Amino acid sequence: MEDAAARRYVWDLPTRLFHWGIVVLLGFSWWCAETGRMEWHYRSGLTLCALVLFRLVWGFTGSSTARFSGFVKGPRTVWRYVRQKDGETQPLPLGHNPIGGWSVLVLLGLLTLQIVTGLFAVDLDGLESGPLSYLLDFDRGRTAALIHEVSFNVLLAVSAIHVLAILFYLVVRRRNLTWAMVSGYQRDGGGEGLVRAPLWRLVLAIVIALTVAYAVSAGFRF
Ligand code: HEM
Figure 1 (spheres, helix red, strand yellow):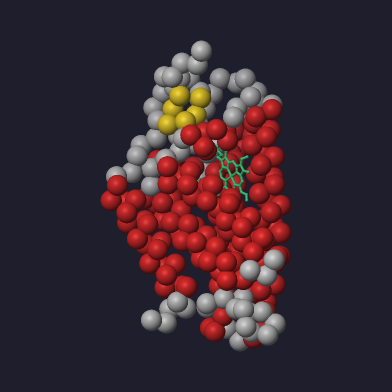
Figure 2 (cartoon, rainbow, N blue to C red):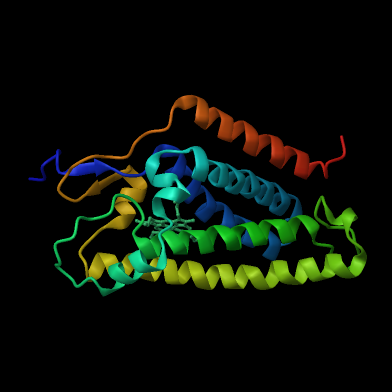
């Protein structure tokens, strides 16, 4: 039977909700765009915008494993991690490993690009455009729309690599990372868990994300 103490709390609830929220909403946004449900595409995109804004703020104010300073490592640490052999007795990192940390930055960067280009995108007849499209002329708005389309495919490709990496850990390293992203717990022999952020920082991050997302959705015109 599994020892309950041999688990560490690794992902706080906001980080997990953010993760599964973006997975569901990305799929939903794509489906809405493909089936012409543009109103829902906007709503879903703006919710994604709030989620990503929240995650960016949480990366500075959140629990220890959610912070950029905790998982973005320099090239030497990444190289040492890459060269580490299977079974080598190095302590397992709590949270993202040094390569995973960079992949998180890439995914967050692509999500940001996807959202920003959507906000500025103009469609051909100018009827279904993002809330900030009025700030650009028609040609630039069309360029934003083009990047919005291309960057979605790049995001899909990088997400596929992300899922393949998770599968690699499951099959080769026998580590179920997905369960940790669902339950919050990592099975690795126990030890110290994450350092939680106080509640006021969570409230602050939510307020910032919602305020900015609301301002953006109104095109900064109140
Ligand atoms: C559209 C698809 C996806 C995107 C854009 C995405 C994006 C992300 C991002 C941004 C993180 C960092 C989480 C954070 O620190 O806030 C992450 C981590 C993670 N994701 Fe995904 N994800 C996707 C699909 C999936 C799927 C389908 C699974 C499971 C099968 C998965 C499993 C995980 C796990 C286990 C982690 C933590 C990795 C670690 O231990 O370092 N992701 N993902």
